[in-house]
Image (cartoon, rainbow, N blue to C red; front, side):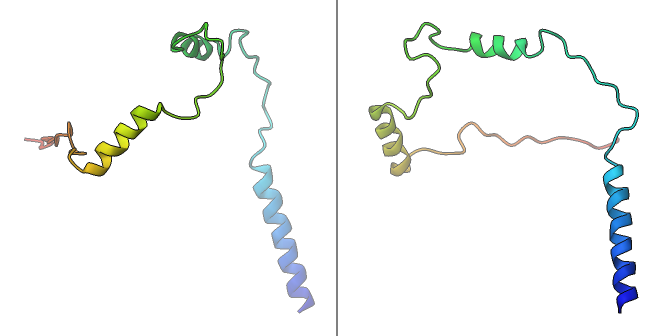
Length: 97
């Protein structure tokens, strides 16, 4: 029983070391990143900001306007809207003829 545990433990250590060494990149060279890395995203966020001069700055919006929320809930609960509105099935002809 002791030899079985020793063999099992040796197999686990061997498998673990092979598994972990497969993640290593032995020929890696650090890649330098451009100085303007990320500027495209920052520009996009800035251009999509509704009111950049707002005194509230970048504070998150915690909810909707009360009247808008009440109207949305009322329409949802009434069941008069078709949730599939605007969705049309698309048929594709993929025959090789």
